[in-house]
Length: 189
Length: 308
Image (cartoon, rainbow over all chains, first blue to last red; front, side):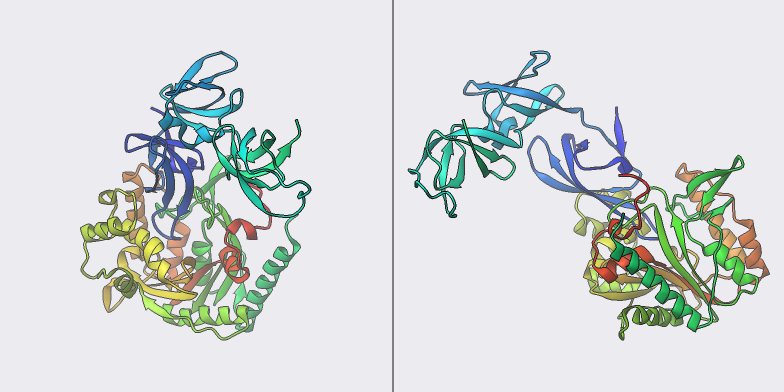
C-alpha cells in the first residue's frame, strides 16, 4: 500500500484517515529547537466534506488514499444521477447528489469539471473556476445605468442566484467565478 | 533580486550585534561548517556531504567547535554563522538558517539572561524588561499541570484535552511536553518572554541545577509563541557529556536512525577543561521576522536557493 511520510505533506495530498479518504488543506511544521517535531494538518474528509485537525509526529507515515482527480465533461442529470464522461475514452461515470454537492449550481452541459474518483467511483465534483451561463430570471434592467454601482439578484439557467449589475437583462450570458459565486462580466453573444 | 530594504535590515542587525560584543571585548570567531562528526541529538537531522570521498556533515550549530576554542583559552567569544538541519521546513523553519551564538566566561545562565536582555535593548534602542517564568510555572499557569508530579499518562491527558486529532498514548512524556509547550503554553506568551529552569530530561548540553535534580540550568527566549533563543550554563563534565552522547546513540539505534561517531576532539577539549561559562544561540532569521513584522521566515532569507 502506498504511503506518505509527513515531510511529503502538502496541500491537496490525499490520505486515508480513520478509514476515509481525506485531502490536506493546510500543513504546519512544528518543532522546538531541541525536541520532537510534529506536523499539524487541517484535512477535509472527502466523503463528508467535514474539516478536521490531525497532529502527527514528524517522520510518521500515513496510508495514501486511492483517489484520482480526472477531467471530465458534464453530460446531463437524470433526476437522480449526474453523468460525466472522460472525453478521450468516452468512459462514463454517474455521480450522486452527495458527491456533486454544491457543484450542481455551476454545472452546464459540455463544461469540463474535475471529478475525484475513489476506488473508481465519483466522490466529489469541482466545477470549472469560471462558468458562462444565461440569466433566466431577474428584475427588468435599468437602461443607461452602466457605470453606477448597485446590484440585483439574478437566477442562472442552473438555478444558482448571483448578484449582477442593474443593467443586466433576462437572456443575457454572464461569466461567474464559481469559487466565490461572484459575477465577473457580461458575455457578448 | 530580493528587496533591498530587507538586505539592509539584516546588514544593520549584524553591525549592531558586532558593536555590542566588540564593546564588551568579545572575540568574533569563525568556526568550520564541515566536520566529520556532528550533533547526536536524535531530533536533529544533519545534512550529509562528501569531501575527498569521505562522508562529512554540515554543522547543525557551532556549539562543539566554539567550546573547543573556549577550552583552548579563547576567552569570551561570539559568532554569526549559518547552520543546517535537514527535514526542517515550514513557515518558521528553513534547512539553512543563521545563528548568533556566544559564550560568556564566568557567567551562569541567569547572568546570561540579563545579557540577552541588554542585546535586545541595544538592537531595539530602548529599554526592555522581559518577564521571566520558570518552565514549571508556565505549565502550572497555562495548564494547571504540576510537572514535579505529573507522570507520562497525565501529560498525555493534557495533550488529548488541548491538541486535536493525536494519538497521545503513543507519545513519550517529553514529546508531550514539547507539543504542549509550542501549541498551548507558548500561545499564552505576549511579546518577549524568558522561560528558564527546563526539565532535566530536556537538559541538552546544560548543567543540572546543583540544588534541584529535576531542573537544568537552561533558558529560552520567546517573542509571543515564537522560539528565538536557547541558552544554558554549560555542562563542563566530560564523563557526563560522553554518557549523554552515548544515550543519544542508543536512542538513535532504537529508532532505526544512523548512529553518530562521537566528537572525540570536543570530548577531549572538555577533558582538558572547559572554563565555567554560559552560552546561547539566537535564530537571527526569526529575530529579523520579529523586528520587522514578517510572519514567515521566507520573507527574510537573502535568496531562496533550494527551490520551491
